[in-house]
Structure formats: structure tokens, C-alpha cells
Length: 228
Ligand SMILES: Cc1cc2nc3c(=O)[nH]c(=O)nc-3n(C[C@H](O)[C@H](O)[C@H](O)COP(=O)(O)O)c2cc1C
Image 1: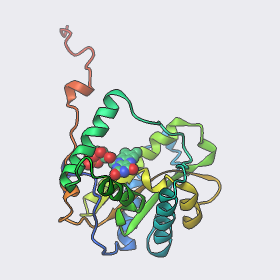
Image 2: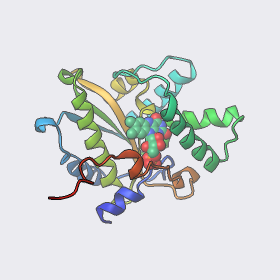
Image 3: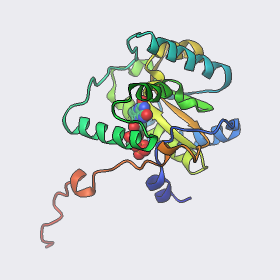
Image 4: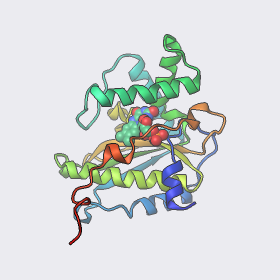
């Protein structure tokens, strides 16, 4: 698979086969992701790759806390509820996913089940918790660096037939993740990636989310001037 194909065909995968992912393959993917650019080559990221019992403990802890109404506890500041165009886009993808899954708007039970999947890391065989060095806590650039490396991870996975979804749900109860994954105190939990072999029969995996086109996202400055 070439790069253009991986970029254009990748989509978030939220339904997985139970088959394990070999550790060597995960190491290969992480080695590629590690090639991401970062500010002054600081490489402030760490990956905590969970499977088996520790991942099960995270799923259980997340689910129990969310169901019993424990407020989300993340280690980074939250954007709060999206507004305006951001809210519109959020609603659009939610409608696409619910339609694919046959979840009717007023079916609270099915909607709740869907949300709980996220807290269970979509029942993926692997969850990669992405953290950064605590000394950079107030540095927005570190978040940029982690975005770059995480996207690289997802693309490298995709080009090997693996599916993934970057997700905030898995780390919404960060104390549970911190404890069960043994995250060192000098790291901050930013996000996680559920990862595994895509279940082709899972309808939401086919959803292609809409993107703004180039005319909507880019301005070209100085291009229309006559060349001397
Ligand atoms: C920082 C970040 C957090 C996300 N959190 C979640 C999440 O908690 N649950 C979820 O189902 N998807 C989550 N996503 C996936 C987005 O919904 C998805 O990338 C977006 O809708 C575009 O769809 P695509 O990835 O299929 O192109 C997250 C993505 C990013 C980059």
C-alpha cells in the first residue's frame, strides 16, 4: 500500500476480531511512528501497549466508573462541549455512525451501549496509551508532537491491515489507566489508540467521515500575482 492510499483509505475502526496482534508487528509499527517530526527533535512521547489482563482491568475499571457516574478524570484540560461548526461536524459523524449501526435517535439503551464500547476500548485486543514527559505539561507543542506520532502509528498500522481508532474515551478515567498500565509519575496521559484486526462485518467500520475540501481549509496567498 502506498502512502496516498493509506492516508485516503484509512478510517477509524471500532469493531475488531479477537485475534491477538503479534508483539513484533507492534514493535515494527512503533518504530515507524517514532520517525515522526517533533519540536527540536525532543520526541516527548511514550507508548504503553496493553493487552491481556491489564487491558481487561482497564476496560472493567473504565466501565464501572462511567456507569456509577464518576466524573471524567483526564490529565489534560478538556475542550468542554463543542459549539458552532465543530458541534455540527460532531453531530454529523455521530449520525453516520448511528445510522450504520442501526441505532435509532430515541433508543437510549442502544446509544448507551455504543458509548460504553468506547470505554471498553471497542473490545480491541490492544490499546496503546500515549503519554508525554511531565516537564512539558504546559507546552502545547508537545501535544502537536504527540498528534504527529500517533497519526504515524495509525497509518503504519493501517498499511499492515490493522485497524485503529484514536480515542479519548479510553483515558477518560485516567486514574484507572495509570494504575493498571503502571504509567510512571513523570508522564502525562494524553490519549489512547484501540488497535487490532478489523471486523469487516462491523457496520461502523465502513463509515467514511466527510472532510472539508481544499477551498474550505486553505487560502493561497501571493499565487495570483503576475510573475515579472
Ligand atoms: C484526539 C482524538 C480523540 C478521539 N476520540 C474518540 C473517542 O473517544 N471515541 C471515538 O469513537 N472516536 C474518537 N476519535 C475518532 C474520531 O471520531 C474520528 O477520527 C473522526 O470522526 C474522523 O473519522 P475517521 O477517523 O474515520 O476519518 C478521536 C480522534 C481523535 C484524533
